[in-house]
Image (spheres, rainbow over the protein chains, first blue to last red):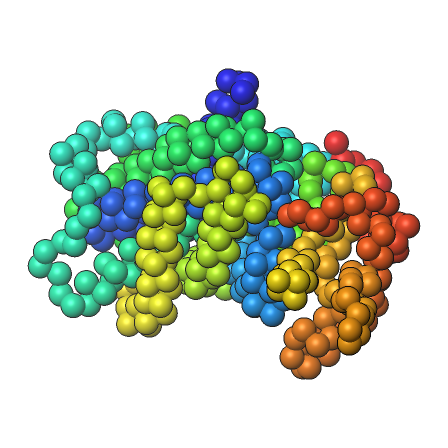
Length: 411
Length: 117
């Protein structure tokens, strides 16, 4: 194991962890409920670690990404349903990320939002065409580390650490009305979905194959999914905590991504604002690339096409067409003028419904000794996996009723 | 029991990805063609790959949509070209030899060959 590679992998995971949904829901959750939803982030992150580790292990041992084996496990009909649902939810997520980039570039340059969304799509597509997988992953992931300014900002504003740490204990705030309680549950479900997006498992496992992972990389996989995801999630939690400290008392509702950047502007001024916006731009841009490639991976693996961006684009032609089509479709959705926050809500809603279909076959594969031999799931992975699977199913069942009852998280 | 063994063989083959001898992904086992008859052993005659093989594996309305989009081509891969069956079916030959790379090659013609590192 190369320590430099391992460190880079972990840093990339940290920088690449946060996306537009986490930015939005972390800031809103902090402003509405203070520190009371920190535990939802921590809890969901453990779930993502469990399933991310399984996805990476399957890639390293069986040398197969998730979607290849998902069809084998689910069969053609249910596999097609899963494929269609995950393509739709990931496409909406991709559109939300592109819309988010448009917003951030609009803040930075003052140019029209839709023009900036189109320009950012062109830059993303150019980078995906020119750069091989490892470079794409590293550049967006490492530049996303500019988001660490949010952690520095949290320290600078001196939050009540005892209350913040108390937020890690699962809780429901007292004195909530029934509407507020439903809103709290909605945010809990939305955070679970935003942290455990299905595209992350597809992208992570396919990335393992792209990088030629084998059994020797199991330690890297474990370190990336535990340390990397944990630190990435802490970054999202700092956004929530700063929002709780700065926005909640002032009754500011961070309805747009730009409001979140103010968390760094308050302690550090213009420099903080600029670094925060650039960090958000890279993190959201990285997530746009991941979602777009996740869709291309899914469709290529489902139909057995050549795939991978470690190959030149013309060596995996249908895969190349798939990611180009996905990026253009996502841009087309943004260009209809649909509100980015609506897209984020739909992305989270669709994703939580797809989650059980994603994680059940993954868990079965990772536990199959025929594929995995001595690396099949043991008691801890099995126990955590099934626990989270039941929770994800309950959240999926509750998602639409909660969305309707709260009008998309409004009290 | 032999019957159970052969039925399991088919269920283990269906929907497995296929890799050629150069480790290129070149399709999915969309169906399995069997041969045999009463009193004779049932053997795998070919792996069927391509949208045409979806017929009978999905509702008619869904198959009509698939056929309209992707056509109804079927490629037959004889068992003599299979090297091993694990988490994927590995072929002894190249994808081109059994006709599994035609669509990929057609699409490749549209993709410009420049600018990528």
